[in-house]
Image (cartoon, rainbow, N blue to C red; front, side, top):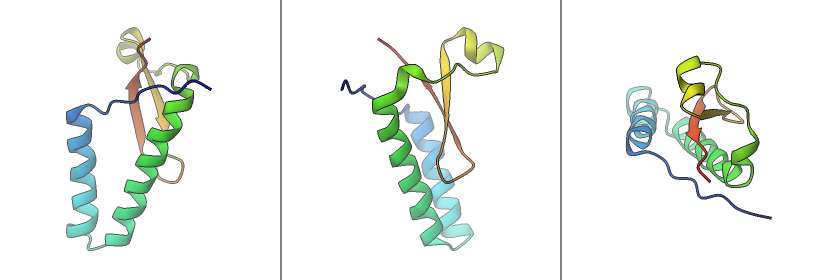
Length: 85
């Protein structure tokens, strides 16, 4: 089985860290922040296997630039990514 290299853009990583900080420090829910982080890691690991088979984004601009989306398994977050051969 081929594995694909997943690179998280610095801006996306910064956004994720901001969400996690908000959950942990503003909402005072460290366990929820850990669960979202684990879900993000699991989604990244899933992409290593299935990156090229998911559908393109519905948004016309993102679609035209080759972006695809994957929903986190346990949370209402979407990861937008671009598959490069």
